[in-house]
Amino acid sequence: MMNRMPLLLVLLALAGYLLFNSLFVVNEREQAIVLRFGEIKRVETEPGLYFKLPLSMFELDNVQIVEDRLLRFDLDDIRVQVSGGKFYEVDAFLTYRIADARLFRGTVSGSLQLAEQRLRTRLDAALRRVYGLRDFQAALSAARAEMMREVRDQIRPDATSLGLELDDVRIRRTDLTAEVSEQTFARMNAERLAEAERLRARGQEAARRIKARADRQVVEIKAAAQRDGEILRGEGEGERNSIFADAFGRDAEFFEFYRSMIAYSTALQQSGTTMVLSPNSDFFRYFTDPNGKSE
Image (cartoon, rainbow, N blue to C red; front, side, top):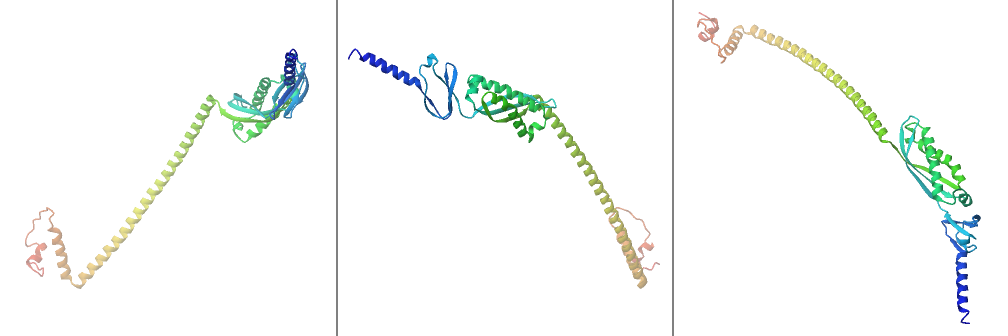
């Protein structure tokens, strides 16, 4: 019995090893390709525990695990030319999943790296074609959504030929290249300066019109004021003369006396003027006689 124990242990170990090599697990984010002597025997897409022939070292059954979830591939800093000859720098990405594991294994040996290399080439070419049909402004307008659909539709047949299902293509960034940015800035700056000059010229023209209108109004107001002043002055002079005439008609001697008093007041003010007159002059007749009678 003791002599059989090592043999039993070896057999148990061998059975355990064979059993362990006969099992494989597929989770919900994976799918398994079962290969026998290098040929695909079956594909397991549902999660669970599965059996295969053991001794994969002898290529009885090998299992290759591939993704069964949505994958993303990014393509950055692609320089594309639009129809006008200018250039953009574009970042884009696409999302896909492995839809046909058999075809995926047959075309790229089940390698995501090989598949994404081919997707890079197709995506780059499609972006260049789509941008090349648009002008400078279209890439930044609402046409961008249509451009993404066109890129997706162009790549989809190539992705299908690799066993991939293309879900979507998105353009993440569209920027001007450095030289185009400088040219665009210079053009926009020149346009703004020209617009500023136009606004300044219109403002100066409006200022000249307003000033001319104001000057004309000043002249008109002054002329009207001078006219009204002359009219009022004339009316006042007429009324003054009328009052004087009326006063002279009522009392000629008093009026003569009043005018003499006004003359004295005006002539004898401290004006620094020296007057040499005879005492017997008519100018001083009211100083010698209250009645103003000269001798």
